[in-house]
Amino acid sequence: MIEENVLRLKKETAVNGFGEPVTLVAATKTRTPEEINRAIAAGIGDIGENRVQEFCAKYDRISGARRHFIGRLQTNKVRSLIGKVFLIHSVDRDGLADEIARRSRGAGLVTDVLLEINVGEASKGGYPIEEGMAAFLRLSRMEGIRVKGFMAMLPASRDAALLIPLADRMRALFEEAKERDEAVEFLSMGMSGDYELCLERGANMIRLGTAIFGERAQPRL
Image (cartoon, rainbow, N blue to C red; front, side):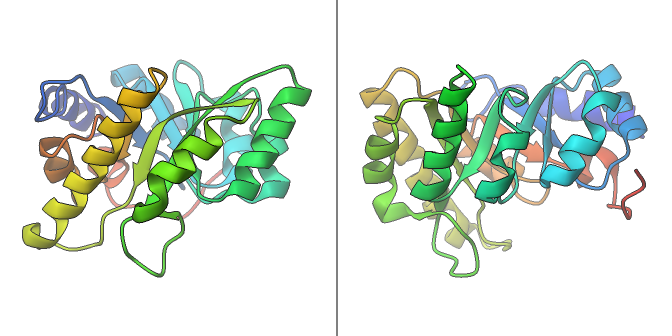
């Protein structure tokens, strides 16, 4: 089933509504290394973990894909990711950006990150969308990190009238940042329940777990 899902999704999500190529990130929270390696063998080139402990436990047991970190990140866990990730999606506050930049400079590296934007849900983290551009301009000046774009999670709703304006605001923010800085490349928006809408409205990176692996099981490391 994993292999069939990967092949189907890679075809369905090859480009977004703007005709741009899409990066499909397999969200691997609670998935076993065996399951993840099957997805990679079927064509997945990018995988994303939500928890640092799982990221570290699986790291040496998986090969052939770029690693992303897509969950909330505590500053005291940053050191475990430096030099091992292609992209950190969840930079949601200046203090975290500072720590990633400091650790990266200490290792002689530049770490690519996305700024997490909160589109209006009080229960979620991230920079308020109204402050997204100011945060982007501020963090883009930090040595040790490179801001590659934005990540957002839309509300868990099937109401297109609610979701479309939020997705469009994220696309507008992305385009403005891209005009200001050629390093900007990714708008990471869309999960298993809403990726089709997000792609239509201009996301070029999506994070799919259930759509690839099926319903989530308990951790079996």
